[in-house]
View (cartoon, one colour):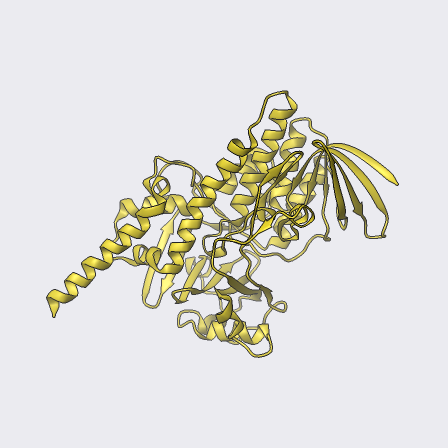
Length: 419
């Protein structure tokens, strides 16, 4: 059997894998990337948040992505009936990027992968991981290419950025149930023939149909728009008979007073994709000789677009820690990798949970707005969830809940006085 020898094997050529591989290569590490699918391919996660821009810039991928002229995302809009809340990333607490992109992931991921190849990194498409065996921290991974030919890849370290493929979690029995309630999504793209001129036609929006059900609208610079509905799995399944995804998504669009005229009856560019019970978690994010990054370790919920940001954050961090270790410096993976990532994931987990309880929605739509509170929440939505000078990061466990309770109590008191 053919054998290859590298320092690091990266599984998966999505954002996490490309950021990892690029940073390793930039620092003189011999890296190989294997990707099961053929690019370009359709994948969810089309709305980014500003924190990812730090990673693309540091990995040397920003220029190639910026040249694609993807739609700029300057903030996000949340709609609930006649109520509207808009977050502007340029008006947030603390430092950081003021914008990011809304991207068709097929084009976006392929641009990154091609830039990785241009850099001279060995990236092999349509190559599936069959098995992994560890000898201490060293590993032997058997992969099979599109022609059915198998080979061994010997590596000093593996970064699993396989996303929903979850290669090492499956092979090493690392999967564990998510702490979030089961939710599902159905999405597709449409040729946005009714797109309005100006900001209305480009602004990413989340239309709340019920407390736990919402429609996403993500316009792209190519004239298409991504449409998706998210809700409890039982609700999503009840949107159609016989699991008819076209009927289900059309029924969700018909529930939107705001978007029915723009998208009602519009032809879908491809058959809608269903992601059922999408939240994921793992027993451990690392082990001797490997680290799990991106969706291969943890995926929360698409409501605040955190998926790619956590993918690139963990991918960059895993690469940096391997480089540190290869220089003979001791790395505490529990503290420096898992502990760090869990802090950020914990903040976003709170916000996802409080979104679905309705508490966060109470803060979003409360009038009059509190500009200071809004700026601090905006920083969280931008992905700066490790900045503990922000009380909405440091006290995330209780602050959203307590403020919502206070607002609701004051509202009830005011209504009693009117009576």
